[in-house]
Image (cartoon, each protein chain N blue to C red):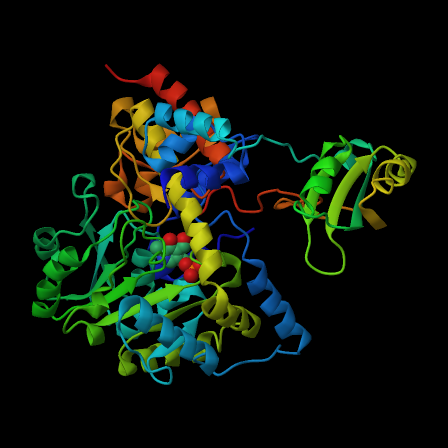
Length: 162
Length: 391
Ligand SMILES: Cc1ncc(COP(=O)(O)O)c(C=O)c1O
């Protein structure tokens, strides 16, 4: 694995890992690591850094839906153009092209189910290439991006042992 | 209450209380401690291994197994040994499944020792070899290993401690508490002495998978050493299975039969559900194990570079999950250092002398801890040293 890839693997799991820590792990100078990360950001290999939040624990209950979208592909561009248009809506979190019975999978978040229903009926279904939509609401999240939501992370080991 | 001590066996009375125990009591009385004093993985056993155990229970596997352990498991162990250390063992006659390496150490010592026989114990080392020797009516002879040698056992030093009564040599590499390893050349130098003096080796290789640069080498793989060596290994460290209490011994059939005799009367057999889980670990556990080892390796480097930064002298530990830096610059004894570090900075590390007198002047720091805890602990140790650096 080259250095860039090694750095990415570490950051993939912990975006907050400091350049100093990465430098220690990879036996490199901290400034070298910083430069590579900056370059990766500039080249849009690192697109950004998110935080995985358990909103429910705070008592906030937003709504997430996964929408299966069937699309009529267009001459020359296929699914690209409509996918790009869907991406532009700020309430859309993810867009994937899928194999199987439908074409695009669109993940949308809103404050209430009404918000999402409105988005589907007024924004998504109205696109001329969109032929049909099936909306699935997320009822509960158990695991996301490697993190299990409810598992207590306490250390059960004895504090000192041989 | 009347004092019943006079009834206790002399051998038991003669064993000193564990230095770790004393320190453990101190640490448990303190709140909010970051502990680098642990001797086990910070991972929970991989899920697929736990599931194999649920499945075994659901299927009703709740009975005794043969004394030696499930044949299926012994077969997997034999395959593993062939692959890992390049030595073939017969699953029927040369493999015994035990309650961890802990039991295997006890069995091996008791199977071999006559009263007064001497066991050469390179120190610093894991805490059970000397007491195990005493309980087997043998005499433990400490053989020092040194920081300057990265705690390798040196042939010229070993030779000085050999007497006509020497019977067993303990080798425990990768080493707890030092993180030291023995490479092939190091072992080759010992081989001649071992054969010349007709010694049996108990090789505790429980940390063998946790070898970071290059491959672990077992002394059993060297010419003429197979039948003189009892290789002990287990699941506790590599597969994060300390609580399952499962390990094994491989060696010459006469010795394994003798160990099995003790085991059959004192233990009967290792728990069947742990044996089933161990089969799963050997069959499908490699990739999760590698992931854990990569993680230890990252943290090993973070700890090492942290020690360098705060000025703690430490060689590169190439195995296990411990570093064993010198605390000379503090001018304190190991125990004093650990107690004051605990009280002043709430960081727990283990005094080196808990692993033998020549561990004095060092501390054992375990990097099976989160990166955050390691970094915070090192920062606190740095503050501590800034206040207490001598001269
Ligand atoms: C060197 C060494 N041998 C043996 C053991 C005990 O292993 P087990 O859990 O298999 O009894 C340990 C545990 O800390 C150890 O460090």
